[in-house]
Image 1 (tube, rainbow, N blue to C red):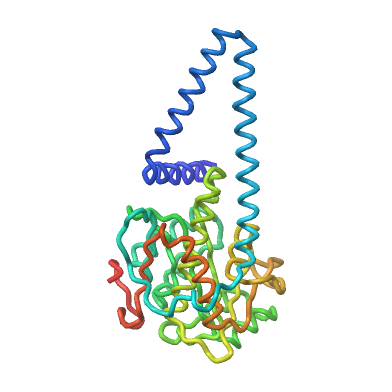
Image 2: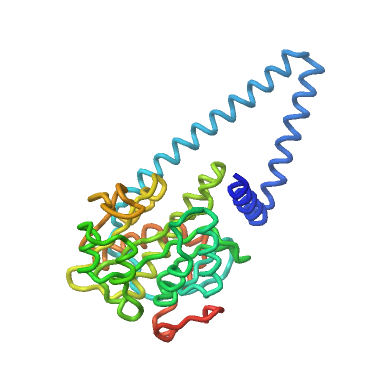
Length: 329
């Protein structure tokens, strides 16, 4: 309970630092409500107070219902992305960093080693189980530093991340058939850079948005999810070599929130996990994904969220194979 409260406070303080004007607006709203109730009490007595409270509750309920309806509509729209016109698809290239402006988020690929350690620590705090092996996760990061997509604000606070693994196809097939647990798959089939850049199977591993702890941040969480999807497909497009028949993208839907993000990638449930901690969970998949498919997804979310995030996806030539340092240079 205390860990969850700590995360709530951490995210709330980060939100307040990013949007200090909200503190003033909320304070003015409460002050106005108190003054209105006081005036109503003087003029109309108890009936006036009751009327003010009833109006405030009705207005809050109506706003909540309208917000929920808009979120449902947007969630359905995001889960079923429509490909844009061909001339709208941005060419495969480095997404250059730009002036901050009103951009409150930052994604840099590859991420600095210090950020990777902090990501692992936060994941451990959230899951509180054997699902996170810090040594295993850092070993995977060092073998392929291009595979971590971390969403931060401009002060370095972490709001979410996605990491993906590249697997050898035959080993991953054994996992799908139930012959391998996931730990065996990591030990036997995980590909390191630069071999990972030509892998047939891309597996979206951990997907975590820290805002899931706060119901009041649903709109911001939707924006953060969109940025994470945009940044992930941009990194894959920049760094991956696509075979003629495309790549296969897999993941496991641990809960409804994670499944919703997987559908933003175009993945659909195909079978259930047969062994290990995720036994019984749905495996999501999209096979034969070509470059143009990911370009369509990138275009969709880039148009919607690029004003909120500085995305710096560095080319492979900018980093020696198998090496990454603490500054991300």
